[in-house]
Image 1 (spheres, helix red, strand yellow):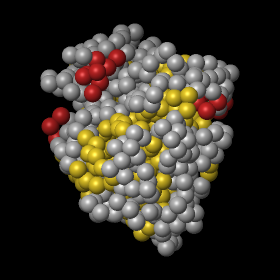
Image 2: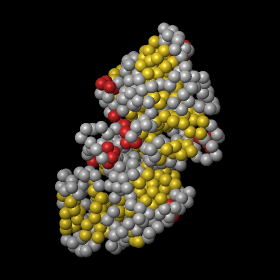
Image 3: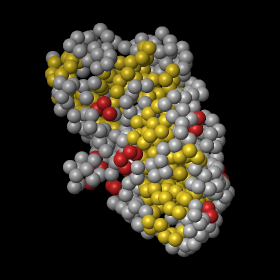
Length: 637
């Protein structure tokens, strides 16, 4: 099997790892009534752990697992034994779990927000073990079947501390408190692929007490394509620390092992913000979620620690779980959707997306207005406009959060995401192998390659300087040479400049190349890039030559295009956008511009539907099929 097939999950044997099958961060609102959480994790058949925390209230971290059974709750920020809560988790399902009305997991307070982290039992990833203590050194079997990265132990029958063994401090241990590392709990015997050893202590091996152990793997020795979890360490110093995992994480647990400090849980669903404050929860504390500081940044190959600025020189341990981007989508509806909505003069939640979105492109249809690009990697209040060169700007109260199945908006009198007397179109994207990726990076003014997780060679790239004013830069595979570029906020024809893309170094399935111009690589400036590719039956990055009449543009689809972007490249021309929700029909089709602010135009028939892709017509209003004109396009099925 080729590396590409493993990355894309297309092997007929199905042996490519898929993190989404074994781990989930799922956000939900409390209702005070029974509800079902469908997160795609098979707990009924495979078993696992559910970890739940109320985000807005001072409520403990509640843990439930399939070994101890439904209702049986442990709380990480207390030393209490197991508590039977019949209104908590009420069932383990093949695709998630059921909840009762208990305030620990499902309070009906106004818009009470919860996060659940679910770990499924799987070889080399996670296992659950119960045992009875004997007050002397004993060896306990587990089914991890690979190197052990971390073990969390708690007596379920008695009041006593949580204890944590970590591979980076093998002769010490931590507890779910703020203290630094303590003495050894293993008697000097390191865990193996099948067993771990404990010496005598009531906290983790008291005579006659029952215990639960959560055993987490470490995939450092695995083939890079199959890694899902890593447990490691770093030392903060005078500079930010770059932690190289070899992949992008979605969940990171961090604790200082050398100094007194809280534990911190970060995840990309609640928000690990590039260049902004991160959402944190502390397993040792019942406090509500905080977003007071910048702790870490996620990268395509790991994360960057800012703990040096927060706490000075210290040693840290971490557990990181890979982002769920190891499998290509089977249908375009899994990764893209267009929604229409009438704006309001107040806050609202937009739901029904069908997937956790990563990128939202929003635009008012009736009035002059900007096209806004919102990204999960930034704070919800931070936005870029495709029609402007301005940097990332703050629009507090406009987009207020990325949710599990949509997003929330405030009142917006700027007509970019929500406003009364305005109708909106929202184009929603999810990052996925072979389809689309988003990468942030810091420039260094030196020709270089930037890692990405697309899994295939990017065929179209949008780059925007986020820290200062610069036009958008666009690479497309069908421009006349690798030195050509376009600008998303301008109508220019393709232009030659060898300082944009790193001439002589091709884009690859793991990196894209940039040169030295400030548009893509100023020293110490920050950038965001959007990478697109052709994925059979789902998306198409292509080009065509106009014939002055009409022609069919085949994309290899079976039911036509739901989204089409077209730009003329041999002469000036707008960036036109159509979608099937507003209408790609055999008649006039509404379109908008990415590069300009006019209201939606509905008075011409520039595009028609076709099962294989779409049809372009030559009309003077858009000139998207001028004889001998050259055009690039991007289409989604």
